[in-house]
Length: 125
Image 1: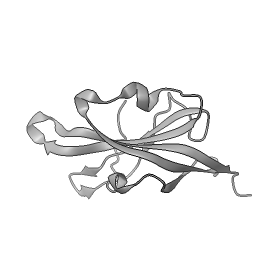
Image 2: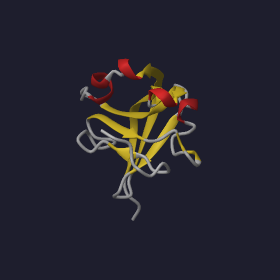
Image 3: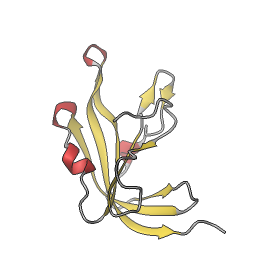
Image 4: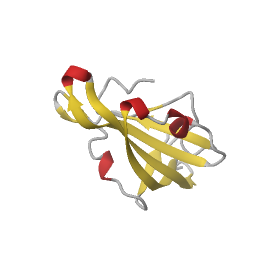
């Protein structure tokens, strides 16, 4: 799985659950680029209890509440925890984080924001 080529856009992992559907939906985005901050630059600032909204292609909005913020070394990234369907509606946001080491391929960690579904609003008429 790869993040979008455009650093100003986040991408949904389309082999998983759509945001707001049953299971774990995952959205990835860059933290920065050669030209500066990217779409998930401030992601690590989110805290448990805060809310965020995902606007879907059909115009509907899905609200989630942050339950945890975690940083994992790349070698210990918990893929099963992040991507697994868990019988509830979750959204997990992923970006790079930790120390940047150009000689070792870039960022050495990943930041994951875990959230749970709160509500879905119908598309505007």
